[in-house]
Length: 82
Length: 80
Image 1 (spheres, chains in turn yellow, blue):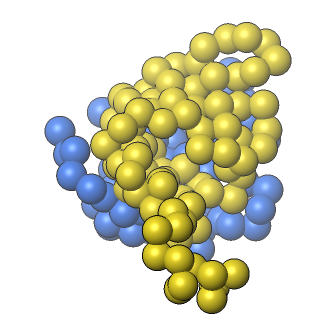
Image 2 (image 1 turned 30 degrees about the vertical axis):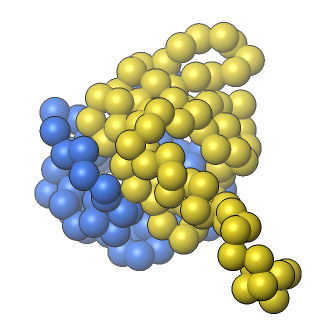
């Protein structure tokens, strides 16, 4: 797979895709019944993410949580999908 | 305000000393002043209060939260 990437430079790596989303609104789905929408400021190799202007959703009891301005660091351990 | 590209490590350096909320996967919130943290997201807080749905325990002094053991969803929210 690594050789494939070397011979095919037009391939888009997952972290490149996340990098393209910096400055945009992203929707994060967690392993638990929680989703987070916010603007992506940055991330690292573990996909820990720094987000801003957060809205947090709980899924089962359909309640929109506190809209947290300011910044959060989201631990990438529990992220399912971006 | 700070819309520049910011990695988690940069973020961590600049929030030390600020009041934060650490949210765990279990739904428990810990609010306090961030004393220090490390690359494993171990966190030391001062003047910590523990919130479950209402306010439960009050911890003054230091609180240590072990990071990155896979069971924690750690959000550090800086509140004004």
